[in-house]
Length: 158
Image (cartoon, rainbow, N blue to C red):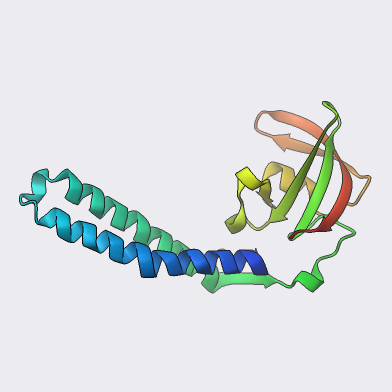
């Protein structure tokens, strides 16, 4: 059984999503299935098949969220050490090869969002940064090859 590490805000986001899927999405899908059944022959009813597929995806996500929340360890914001990169920190880094600065928030695997530069502590970049401090240079071993990053600043993630 996998143990999940979540920040307090990450837990709240997952709880909101779970509530939405149960109280809003589930009834919407049930109504779609009911309407699609009214079209008649279910064996050739694309609307019914799609509604059933959506119901399956929704129920799967509900189960996944319930499992994550049931087995999650919640990080206390006061326990975040800003001397080292860890879950709940925001890290400003420099790609030493391209002289390009980036900022990432390190979270547990259930809280990632690449579009907002929120990465997992288990991702190649996240794992390489974990436990290192300002000024440290780390080598990231990624599927496309290795590269070097220098940690410029560590702060508390919002």
